[in-house]
Length: 186
Image (cartoon, rainbow, N blue to C red; front, side, top):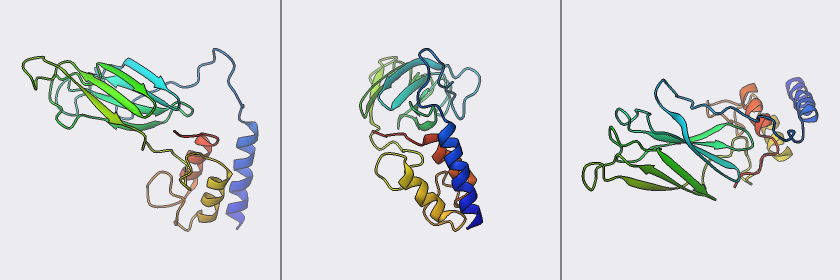
């Protein structure tokens, strides 16, 4: 019980000191790929729609040299939500060379794809409506006091408050929830 009260006090102090809105022109976040390396060309293309930002990295090499990838980020938090890869990705596809997003639909270009001949290119559509909402423990598409209550109830008993999928409910989960507190997910 002492831990729960201490966590609640810490949570309330963080929430009460967090600025409600950034000033016009303030940098909000620097986005980086969680697995980024030299020559990924992360950020060559970007797009934003509501609560989701997509960033292309056409030099990424998960499916071979210069096969490419795209990353989804929460606009309100700057946290990476997902990494997108084509099911048939190959070297030199340059997937992520161009990206666009509208609501829950993403399109990612791969101009180097050769399914219809050398460098014929292709584009991939993704439904990202099911993108995770970090910290939303009750599934209502927002991170609020209800989620904080669930986390505090489950703290250290490992039953329902695991935000980081590491198998337990601890201060890391509290940090994730607080970082996303007030977020409304689409």
